[in-house]
Length: 114
Image 1 (cartoon, rainbow, N blue to C red):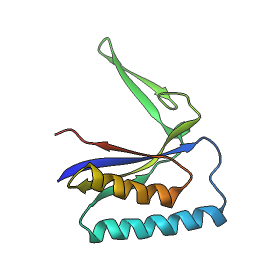
Image 2: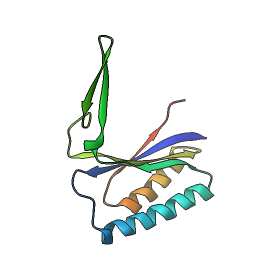
Image 3: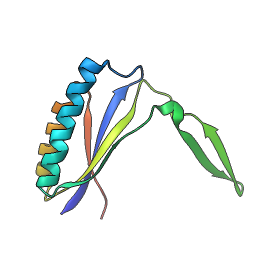
């Protein structure tokens, strides 16, 4: 079984209102339950806004620390799920269910190396 990263990208801006967010959370809870029941769930999590990020760079024997996201953009990584799947087709099927749960946000599916 290979592991896959299912990344959810979201636009910068405020959190959706509860009437929108509550439905998304219900769908995500159901999907996570299905992933766990299938033995495919490894880990999942949502992220705080990019403004909470800290970037570290090694330079000349020192570590430079910068507040804020690594890159400026209109979209950012908002959350992710790591799954195990026998092949890309199975991972894409789970990714499709995740995309449905967080619609209209895009979901990227990428295999881990090794």
